[in-house]
Picture 1 (tube, rainbow, N blue to C red):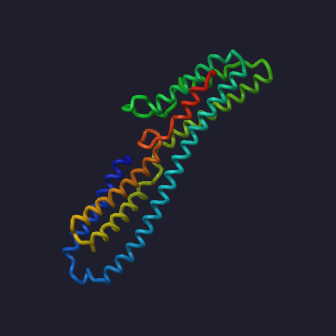
Picture 2: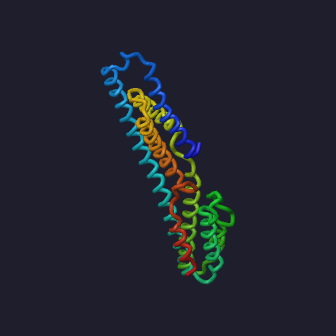
Picture 3: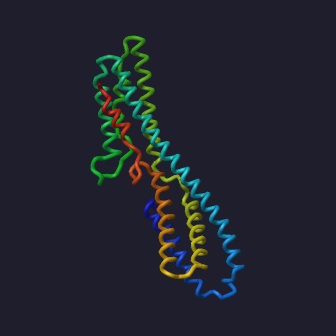
Length: 250
């Protein structure tokens, strides 16, 4: 399931658990609603609440780390594009075609990953034309040691660009295991059920439970969106690649 569908399931389970608790209260014997019973339930749910908070904190930290890693990868790839272009410029005029293809590659990546048409889905997989500049560099015939050194360095950086690009492709799937999320949903549903169990069933309580469930589901949604920083609602910035494009072939 995607982030939106998962968030909806979380909301349904959590708010549904609260409503079940409110309704279940009417069917419980009086001795099940005694102060001693409430204290025991609160103690047990306190443990569940602590575990849920810890898990949510870990998920947020993991999602933020994944988001930052991909953001750094795009920045590094952009810097490598500029470095390859400068190396080719120092190599000599015979790299004109390679530099032209390099600029076209950056423009193509921008259009595929961050399309101007918002209705288009992001496409991360490199195309054959996007990797054509590598062949142009490989076909260069250096005449001096300096040109040979520049060519080897440009090939190395081009290889790093390709590796980074494929790394972005491989990181497009959610890394949070589904059972992990399922257990968290179970804990939250049980926690909200306990809230509803000892709460009066008036509109103020129901509205408060609704807002709390909405907040929890929104938190899960944001966590999952951070895990998908390309093509999702919270996208990493394309500014580094735009800056690289502006500085190529100068």
